[in-house]
Length: 296
Ligand SMILES: NC(=O)c1ccc[n+]([C@@H]2O[C@H](COP(=O)([O-])OP(=O)(O)OC[C@H]3O[C@@H](n4cnc5c(N)ncnc54)[C@H](OP(=O)(O)O)[C@@H]3O)[C@@H](O)[C@H]2O)c1
Image (tube, rainbow, N blue to C red; front, side, top):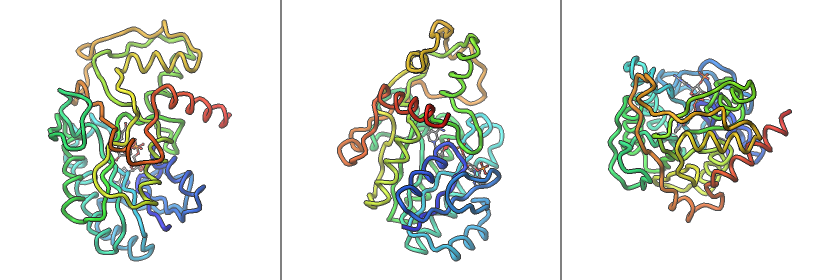
């Protein structure tokens, strides 16, 4: 299948392009600044309407995974205009063109579309973001639903994995680096979510593409966990000293954007539908360890 992946240089996009290429798909990997590692690279800004039109006319993709976004939650709060342009207008550009060219669209969304008061959110639960990043991703979902019928909205939560092309550090790699250097870290106990290994998410997304499954799906890890316990499990899996990790409360940190308290996702629908199941945290961490060993 001819697939266009936006955000191909990101944490998810890199893994997705690698695995889709391995499955013999023809992968066009779109980026903005950092050249992707896998697929046929294509540089364009998703908020540039004419550039998006040209790309679709040239490539004529059968399917698109739209993973490009401004993902820095605090930057979205301070640079609202930019966040809107990329996350809302950029998504509208992609969705319109998918409709025009009959391309199946997967939009990668987030657990931050929920307010975090309840946790274990189902696909049908009320959407009420508490920060600007969450709001722009929700508006992106609305653009997708308004412009096309052949879509899947896939909500993930705290993605982690081995190093992406951008070299942008994720929580898991940041923590492992700190512990290897024997540095102490403070990690919050009052933020809960469903950490998602990029490889697991990429495999689920590829299955959705190949089977053209439509609708909204929570594609996240199968374990609800707080950030502190996640850090402890990472330390245990990689045989590092978990005593360097001190529990903390989120009021001790001065983040610009508010974070939901419990944005964990109920993955029952994905579990029942897909052959590639959301992984439990222990399985996912073992897989990550194997991947890191293989890259050495
Ligand atoms: N990370 C998480 O914990 C998390 C959790 C839930 C959902 N999500 C969603 O999952 C998706 C992937 O996240 P990620 O963590 O893999 O992202 P990431 O590592 O931050 O990468 C972002 C990607 O978007 C591209 N991009 C940014 N602005 C662009 C623009 N104006 N035009 C074209 N491309 C642009 C970047 O390209 P360059 O590198 O070239 O700048 C990069 O490839 C996003 O939609 C995000 O909202 C992420």
